[in-house]
Length: 415
Ligand code: HAM
Image (cartoon, rainbow, N blue to C red; front, side, top):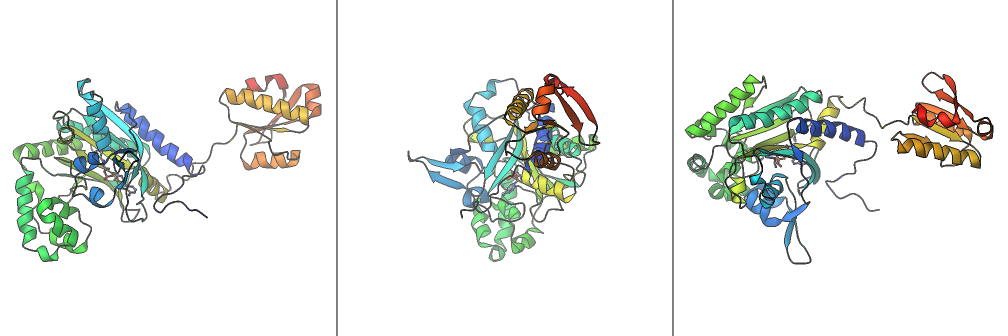
C-alpha cells in the first residue's frame, strides 16, 4: 500500500466545497481591490530563493525541496510565492506598466518542515504583491484587504499584530545592538542562533527555542531604534488602520522568517488552532526587486495559508452548512429506449450547465429513486415505456412530493 507522502494530504471531493467557498471569496476580494492573477512555475532556480529569501533563514537553510534536473540545473520547489512573482515582474518588464502593479496568486507551496497540526510540507497560499507604491497607505490597503476577506467569511476572532523592522539605514545599527546584547549571553543561545549571531542576529528573535525566547525578552526593541523615516512610516500605517477602524496590536518581536522585509511587517493570528496560529502574514519589501536584478521598486504584500484558514473556520463552526452540490433533476429510466431518452435529456440539460443525474448502474426503479433521495435531487422524473408512448412524464418535487405532468419535449425548457 503506497500512502500519501508525509506532510501532504488529499483534498477530497467532499472537502472541496469549503475550499471553493473560501477561495472564491478571497479571489473576489482581490479583484475588488484591483489585483490580477498570476501563475508562476512550481519550481524555480534555487538561487532565486537563496538570494531573495535569504540564505540564513530557516526556509532556505532547512526547508527547501532542492534537486538537480537532468541538465544539471539546481531547481527548488517554491517555498513561498513572493520571490517568483518578483522574478516575473522583472523578467516581463512590468516596471513599464502603469504603477502600481497589483498581482495575486493561489498556489501550492513546498517546505520540508516537521509535520504538525496546521503545518504541512505541501500547502496552499493565496497572496498578493503590490509593486510601485512607497507610501504607508499601500501597507494599509493590503492589510485592509485581509480584513475585508475575514469580514466576508464571517471571521471576527483573528488578531492583527504589526511591527516595523526598519530599513537598510537603521537596521544595521539595531543589528549591532542585538549582536552585543546576545554576545554577552552567547552560551545560552541554541546552536542555530549561535551561528546566526554574527550573520543575522534579527533571526534570533524568530527562534522557537525556549531559552532564546527568554533571552530575547530583555533585548533592545527595534521600535525604539527606527530612523525618522521608518518611524514616520510606521506612525502613518497605524493612523491609516485607526482611520479604517482596524484593530491591531504592536509586537516588537514580530520580525518574520524571511529576510526581504523592510519597514512594516504583520501577521494575522488565530488562537483557536494550536501553535501554528498565523493564518496570514506579510509586509513591505522595498529592496527585493533590486536584489533580484530589477530597478529599485517599493513593494508590499502578504500570503494567507488556506489550510489554516480552514482549520480556523472549522473550529468556529463557520463551515457547517457547506455541502456538495445537489442535482436539480434525477431522471430514473427503465428499458433500452427510455434509458437512451434519459441520456438525451440529461445531455441537453448538462450542455445548458444544469446539474442532472441519470442511472448508469442498471439499477431497478426502486433503487434509482432511493439513490436520487440519497444524493438530494431537487426533482425526479420516471421514464419507462408508458411515458415514452404517452410523451408525458410526472415531474416530482422531492421536498414536498408535489407532482406535475410535463410533456417530455418540454423537460429541458423547465430548467
Ligand atoms: P509566510 O509567513 O512564510 O510568508 O507564510 C504565509 C502563510 O502561509 C502563513 O501565515 C501560514 O498561514 C502559511 N504557512 C506557512 N508555512 C506553512 C506550513 N508549513 N503549512 C501550512 N501553512 C503554512 C510568506 O510566505 C511570504 N511570501 C508572504 C508575503 C507575501 N510577504 C509579502 N508578500
